[in-house]
Length: 354
Ligand SMILES: Cc1cc2nc3c(=O)[nH]c(=O)nc-3n(C[C@H](O)[C@H](O)[C@H](O)COP(=O)(O)OP(=O)(O)OC[C@H]3O[C@@H](n4cnc5c(N)ncnc54)[C@H](O)[C@@H]3O)c2cc1C
Image (cartoon, rainbow, N blue to C red):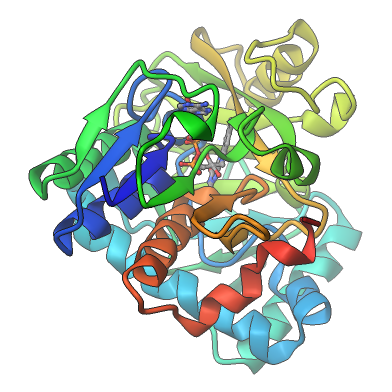
């Protein structure tokens, strides 16, 4: 086998797809089923950029590197639109300010984006039921909404059609079990036990979600988020309101790999959605998922230090829908001998010591 990929989420499937298309023999191992991890459990926001806001990313990375990262994700939103079919809708997204200090932060992000030529619009007049609840908003027109599990299963189908072998229900206990020239670890928050150095650099973090029964009124035409992403919601095409967040109400407890829901966070989510809708909606589904967070909230993507044939792409810090596609393909290209300059942004050695 040329390449073994561990993990059947967006990252692993994107990587396997490109490698198989290039004619390599690829086998993907997934402990559960395709999209069984965060890729099939997330809020479905397909956003430009990384986990930090653009102005913060400029401070963290420098203006040029931040712009490179933002441009990469803009290109990958296009790629997503090309590959995902009706699992992706280009709706734009709305970042909302919960109070006047978040409004200042939102304006700082808007100013930074505008200065560097990235499209964004400030919105002072908010429609019901946002008016009065939020202190302003920024619309980002290139963003969109995903049906995440449908999208990743579709990507896996493309990988299989290109010749990749997909093995579901096959958990790997050790990389030594693999007989392949190169190995790609694409397990994000479920990274545990395969590479101890990686476990030390990626913190499993739980996200919880509810989905209501369909609501007849069309209230939200795109993904919405507020309080620095600790509240996020959208209305699916069938009318259900899908809402997640409130991890900040139990930060320590939610730093876990236990995939379960808790009454505390679920209660916050229900009260929040009831406030938005002006009535207590019936909750049809509840779930949780685990994502991987790194110290600087950027993923680790590239060759693993001191492991000549092992590549990783993990740690998107809750923003892996577009970044996972981008980074899965960046790793595939590097394996094919075409290492792109963007990889430098995510060099694993910055956080992983050999
Ligand atoms: C509740 C929630 C909401 C989120 N909302 C958003 C959002 O709106 N927008 C956004 O961009 N991001 C969001 N994220 C983050 C996003 O879902 C992830 O960053 C992204 O899905 C990561 O994809 P992945 O393929 O790298 O990992 P995953 O999709 O987690 O896939 C990793 C896979 O590896 C498998 N695996 C692990 N260990 C092994 C092993 N030893 N052997 C075999 N298989 C193994 C797991 O079963 C899993 O399927 C959210 C995450 C959660 C949990």
